[in-house]
Length: 112
Length: 111
Image (spheres, chains in turn purple, yellow):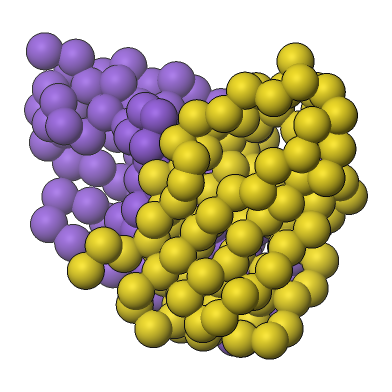
C-alpha cells in the first residue's frame, strides 16, 4: 500500500461545478500537509497548506482529519484555469523537507 | 528573483553515458532536493542536502551521485545511465520543512 494515496481520477467537470479530491496517508506520525498543483509538463507549485482546523483560500477549501488520516480539497465554481493535476503531500514527521511524501496526483479537467 | 533554475531542460543519452544535471536557487534556502517523477507515481526523493556541506540519500539513490557545490548550487550526476533512469527530474529548495519551490524540470531519455 502506498504511503499517500489519492483518488485516481481523471475528474472531468463542467465550468462552475464543485469538485472534491480525497487523500489518505498511512503514517500516523505525519505532521504537516499540503496540496500542490502541477500543470501539464510543468513543476509542482504550492496551492495551500492544510491545517487541523481546516482552511479556505478563495474558492479552495482544505480539510484534515487526523483520526481518519484523511485530507480533502474542495474546489467551488471551477474555472477552466483550474485544469491541472493536484498532488497531496505529507510531511512524515520532522521539520525537514526530506520527509515529504508526494501522492501520485489526481488530474482535473474543467470543460467549457 | 529567478527562483530555482535547472539545466538542461531536455537530454537524450545512450545507455552507459554520463551526465550532470545542474540546479541553482537564489532564495537563500538551506535545503535542496532532487526528485524524479514517473507516470502514475508521486515524486520520489533521490538525494537531499539539508544544509551546505551535507548530502544524504533519499528513497531512490542508486545510480546517482550529488554535489552541494555551495549554498546556491546542487548538482545530480548519472555516472552510467540506464533506461530505468528515463524520467523527469526536479530540483527543489526550501527553508527546512516548509513549502518546497521547484525548478522547471529536466526531461531525460536514456536509450
